[in-house]
Length: 286
Image (cartoon, rainbow, N blue to C red):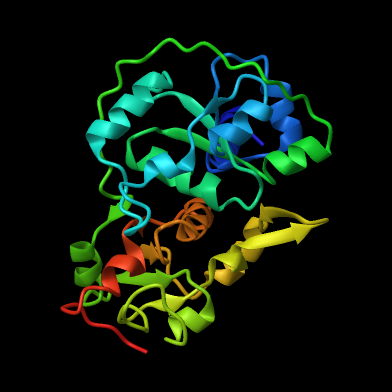
């Protein structure tokens, strides 16, 4: 093996491992515990403030996931840029901030916040696997101290590649280069139950319930291994754009996180079935 070939091989392997690391969108509790003294990371607790103030991971800031909804009682539509800009500034966020998010442990809220941060242009976001209940169970450090924050000058911008609307989803029903995924339970997909006035699903949608992305161990949830996720989504070609929805754009964010880890071009339809199923002008299938 010549010297130049060895250099070339090292460059290729270095690129491979860099890409493999950058594609990892989760972080383990043990890895996070080693980063707690690293002030370059912003840790965000997505639980309600009442839970956060009882105890939280040291250094974590509170961003209750309900603040990501414009009106959660109506549908899952994402909070407006003006309101989100105020929240991000208050948290000291900028587009280049490395962020780690967590919830209590079912991963749906952490995944929703992960998606929202990506929609609003945050480029480095990871999710704590298992969540806070597991963190407590494993006796990692916690605190009641609320950190002081230097506000940022964040300007709200939307990454439309990560956010789908009623209109773009309707266009996708007629586009063979796009795949729509219904993340609701099978009964909802089949039209046996519904959170809207109508029953059924968006035309052409395939059903991959959000629960299928998760593994349970000792009562704690984590995203499945990449090999298992690959088998779950192997019916979807990697060169196709994917749009995901559920009832209010919450549990579908779990699918979003899984597909982002697998390298898909994916967006989440925020208003989801609550909007689509209540609009009698839109087509449905059962």
